[in-house]
Image (cartoon, rainbow, N blue to C red; front, side, top):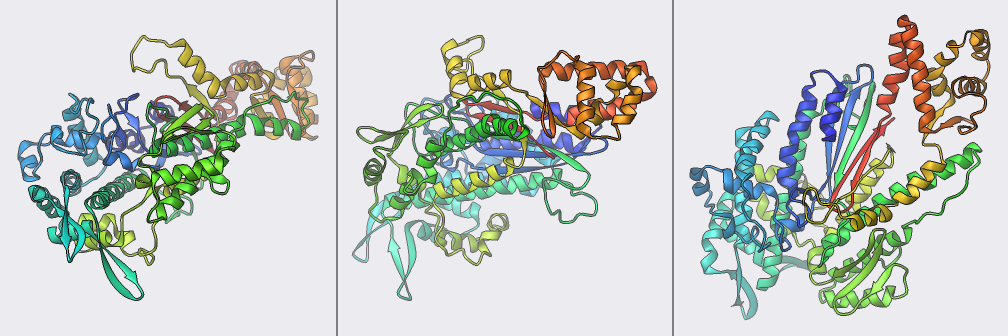
Amino acid sequence: LLLQFITTLSGGESCIGKRILESNPIMEAFGNAKTVRNDNSSRFGKYVDIHFDQESGHIVSARIEQYLLEKSRIVRQAVGERNYHAFYCMLAGMPLRDKRRLGLKDARCYNYLCQGKDTLIDSPNDVTHFENIVSTMRYLEFTDHQIDEIWHLLAALLHLGNISFCEILKESADASKVKDTHRSELRYASNLLGMSHTCLEKAMTTRRIQMAGECVVAQFLPANACTVRDAFVKTIYDHLFCWIVEKINAAIYKPPLGVNPPLDPSAGPGRLSIGVLDIFGFENFVSNSFEQLCINYANENIQQYFVRHIFKLEQDEYLTEGINWTHIRFRDNHEVLDLIAHQPLNVLALVDEESRFPRGSDESFLNKLNARHSTTPNFIRALSSRFGIVHFAGPVFYNVEGFLEKNRDTFNHDLLEVINTSKNDFLRKLFEKRLHSADNRSRSLTLGMQFKKSLERLMSIINGCHPFFVRCIKPNEFKLPNCFDRNLCVRQLRYSGMMETIQIRSLGYPIRYEFPDFVQRFHMILLLHSSTTYRFSQLHRSNFQNLVMEICRAAFGPEDLTYAIGSTKVFLRVSHCFCAIDLCIRWAFGAPRYFARFCKCVLWPHFLHISIVTWRLSDGFLKLILMHF
């Protein structure tokens, strides 16, 4: 909806604007899923940077960055939830002849698609969505061959998910192999991936280890083989998703003239940009696991970003400008961030530490966590297999069962080698950078550290932006229309910091201009008063601060003391801004020859300075529109 508004407001017949909107069905198919609170929940962070021509205001380019894809959903879903939409759309909408060729059946036949148990496996809209996805891909310059290869990979992943392993003795040692009843699934998967089924099975059941200059083959037990299989599937899907995003970027990004390659893909000479960030919001379910910890850690960072801009920077600016100001006490969540990821032996660091120990377990992780943080603020020591953290949105209890398994990245070099032997050019292209990387044998980062680094990259981008925030409140927990839960809404307002925000905005000055900017936009107010014409020409040759004071007195009257003039900026309330614009409109329509000047100086700058942040904390939805200057 926000993207539609921006593209419409920019005017012109923008092909880029249409392509940005058309990319949504593809991104949602491969990155969104049904959760217990949202039937179309974003399970990744999407930052869309939209570039405008500085003169005309038309959209000339755009670029999409993706962050923090929830890879664990590909192999495991909670009760009442689904995998990513693309799998179900493919099985519902693909022609029967093509499904037979790929060995595909009903969605209920696949382990990766029916773990939600009580959830509705099929959706009546999946057939229509499949047709829409294919047509949109063609519009965005995906070739028919590339589209086919995408579905082939998804089919291969479903077949891999149906493979189970049994324990055997091999050279007097415990080992594993693919069950005989699942050999057909192995053959389908290996054929679609373009590799030998023997090599694929070996890569999932063994691992080569370099010890003292010799190569030793370690055998996996069935449980370990399943973990390696899942890591293989998650990594392929993640690389496919990244490739899809870059393919869309190739259709919507146009570098500035004379800049090739661009030094900064998010900007360029003669351009302004608005960024839209869509990311999952705060989550607190009956049973929370490692995924919820990562998601809530991301939301803690966004909350600190909000607090820093609304409270800290606001009050600091008043002090710097010499404006009289009454300090407001607000809740800072830096202690929670320290607990999760910043201080020594934080939660993510302890998960990493135990994940790397051969005998590390979820229980040993919990014991270390309780021993280290039992007295740490915001940490809750719980009984059994849980621990709690007091987040900005309230306490959340996490079940540690499966924490270490989910954190380990078991995509090893043997899996990369089997991809390198593949005859599937499309699959090898997805891993092209990784295959040619000099350090592809180095120890890979755990998923927790990958998530943290990706989040740091995201925060570095939005920290360079100037945000305005709009909060969206979820009316009820049941996705029902015409149902308003008063207590739920009040709770969201309180834990989102809205009460303090309202207080600081009511006492403060939400609109501020630097002196030269204010004079350029509103100097015509002085021209409404003939007696000030001479004084205006005189003041124009003096300093801007005196001219600002003169404009304010003319616009708001000498008795109005509710605005403030600092050392470099003028601070206004909303009523002042409306009053000033109204006076400019009177001047423009009173002198038609100045109307174009009025549009350029007053209306157009106000349009460019609109930046919005929309944040739905309850249903996993976060949008930011951020302005680059």
